[in-house]
Every structure is written in C-alpha cells, then in structure tokens.
Length: 402
Image 1: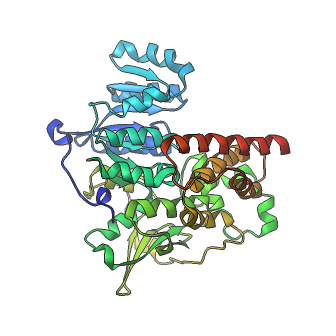
Image 2: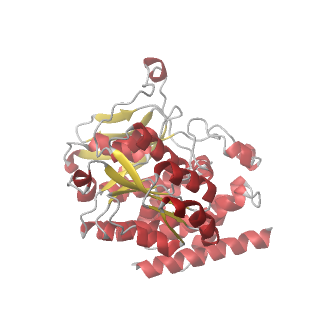
Image 3: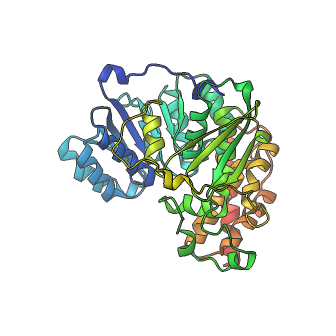
C-alpha cells in the first residue's frame, strides 16, 4: 500500500473547527452528493470553494446557499453571469482552466473533492498536490492517464489521497491494518451494467436511452456509459494499481450484479475481506471526508433481505472487450492509458450524440491506439500533447464515418 493512501497527518482543518472543502465538479453527480454530505454534517464540513464546468445556474444556486469564498466556472463565456449574480454577496468569482488550477493553491480550503469527469481532473489535482492539499479522489482518470506522474508528485508532498470510488473505498477499508505482503489479490466488483446478459447482436442495437439505464447506480452520463461498456472497470483496475501499489496481475474484476459487495481483498492465508453497503455514493464520500471515521447517518442501512441473494460471475471479455484495456495498459505502460482515456472520452461523447453505435466505442479506441506514437516515459507535456492528438484522431474517424 502506498504511503499517501495509508498514513494520516493533521491538516489545517483542526485550526478552523470544520474541514474546509473545495468541490471540483460541484454541479455533477458526485459533487452534488458531496454537498448533501456537507449538509448532513454542518458542524464538520464547510464547502469554501465550488467549481463547475458549464452549469452556471446550478453553480449560482449552490453558491447562494453555501456562500463559499470562491466560485469558479470553467466556461469563460459564462463568467459575467456568475460574477453579476455573486458579487453582491461578497463571493469571489473566476473562470477558465487556469483559474481552476490556481484555485487549487488557495489557502481557504484543506481538502479537495475531485468530482469532475475525465482528463480535465489531472492538472488541478497535480496543483493541489503541489500545495499539500488532501485529495478525496472521485476522478479516476487522473490516475488512469498519469498514475506514475501523480504518485511521484504525492511522494514529494504532504498530500494524502483518499479514494471516493465505491470500489476503491471498499479496498481501502479492507486493507486497513493489513501488511502489504499479506495481500494476494484485489477483487474489484462490477455490476455488469444494463447489458450483462445481452448477446452480440443485441449489443449492436443498444440505444443511448438503454445505456443510460443503469440497474443499480444513479450516476452521470459519461460514467454510466463506461459502466455499460465495462471500460469503467478497466480504468478502476489501473486506478487500484496506483492507489494501492499492487501490480496489475494481482488485480481482477468480478461481476456482482447486486452491487452490494463493493470490492474484496484476498489474502495469502486464503481469507477474503469484503466491504458491503447499499449502492449509495454518499457512503464512500462520508468515509473519505471523515478521514476514515464512521460518521453516523439516518440513511437506511443494508438489510439481511438485500444480502440474501448475492451472486458472482466471471466477466465475459469477448462481449465486453473494453474490460481488457486495463491490464493491457498496465502491461504496455508509457502513454497507453492516456490514449485509451482520450479516445474513450471522444467515443462516449459521440455515442451520446448518436453519431456512433454502442459497439463502435471499443474499435474506435483500438484504432486510436494504433495511430498514436508510443512514448515509454512521458512527461506532463507529453501527456498533454498525447491527449490532444488522440482526441483529434478519434474525432477525425467519427467525422469521416459520419
């Protein structure tokens, strides 16, 4: 297990009574649930920085409710609307990616919840690490794209990274108090998505509406599609490798349709520890923000009835080849995962616009991988350039085929 996911250190929250939180992606699914948790524990958490992409009206409403020190909108064309609405209340405002990155060094928060989706989480996360901020990580793409770069930055920082993904939170909890050498395998559970039992012909006819209908979780559109293709699980395998310092060959995915067992750890003595809970993202958010404290809640607990029919299956990579991308990226290393992530983001966006079919997503990723030059030891500049060129290539394929 890596130092940055195990060692506790005192942060500035103790000096201010409540933990001061920045929410990067405050208007999205994880961001809004983070604010739900803050509202549930007003004596413990204070949202002081709210950052959104383009949902300026929602950001304004959130800011009027929470009165943060700073509100930032990524879409610069919406800045004046944000400023005009919040300036009378003394709330500082800013816009653009540079402003988001700069906000990560603000002295008005202690912990940042990285709840944004995709590659956009990388740069601000690195800036937060350089400023010794604690990271509650819900943006898996940060470690998927540049896991080695991020872990190196963490090794030079006082920052601590706590996982918010339900699967990685479960593993983190199962590893608590265990020696690294006692771990045999990490078992990441997957619901299998809405098409777990579909044949190849059925998958070709999947619609956007079908794909957005996840059987267990209420999530944003992009991650819901990733769950349906099982690319999300490939990314979680990569994320687990960097979070916990476990090699890829010791990490595997297991299909668990009920989403009650959030993940498991198998130990060298043959025993297995699992973390169970209702499929509600507020549970891992509470655990991360509470710095592994068990915060009491009035939410309905897991019942015996829901635990009475738990099943597990081997994933079918022939029908969901996207799952294999995780181990492929870890074996090939370099800029491989960066290319996969960029192509996948473009492909998912195109599917949501109904430009391509559900079964076109994986071939588009592989085509982009074949086209982008391999870089064995990429720098941050290399990752930026690779991300841009992979996106361009994927978009060109989509436009040509359209």
